[in-house]
Amino acid sequence: MSATQLLEVRNLSVAYRQGAGWVRAVDDVSFALRPGEVFGLVGESGCGKSTISLQLLGYRHVSMRVEHGEVRFKGVNLIDMSRAELDELRGDRIAFVPQNPTTALNPGIRVGQQLAETLLAHGRADKESAEATIAGILKLVGLPADPAFQRRYPHQLSGGQQQRVCIAMALACDPDLLVLDEPTTGLDVTTQEQIIALLSELRGRIGVAMLYVTHDL
Ligand code: ADP
Ligand code: MG
Image (cartoon, rainbow, N blue to C red; front, top):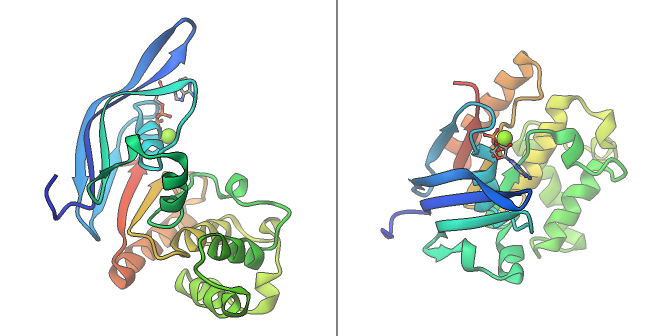
């Protein structure tokens, strides 16, 4: 591990349970990201991109196993981390932007409240400071920050606005690494371009490293 790397994936192999055996979905994958760097993970559907993304978040499941390799974040191997250690890291130092914002957002909770819960969960704001912090994050991702907008439910937003809320939630704790798994796949072409422009602008403004997953070259 060189000191300049933020993330280092080394010889990662992951398998899924299938019947009585295991089938390998990721076979000996290695790559590294420096702080602030953008890395594109590109490949056809089913080649294992999401499986790799999930391992960057320390995802565990009984029907999935890491057969080999390391995922080092700031030198520490995520594969060996406890659930409590991962909970501290996830959403805080490493954040995730999903493919489908509609299912990622809680349909019964207002936009402002969802952001508040993220901030409070990681001790990034108290009840008094949350409002100002939320307004700042909404502006950062190009959304209206007024109270009326914050009171909206996810279904009252366009797909592009929903994805901006997901990006806002991911950025809420000022992470070092953003994992984006096909963040524009469910959006129409014009909205896709706007989200990509936003991400590129954010990279310049806040210098967060990004692992950008797509099947679309
Ligand atoms: P991608 O994101 O590149 O489309 P995935 O990582 O989702 O690919 O899937 C890689 C392979 O692992 C595929 O062959 C897929 O069918 C298989 N796979 C993914 N998730 C599971 C699962 N929960 N159980 C069994 N096989 C899975
Ligand atoms: Mg995928």
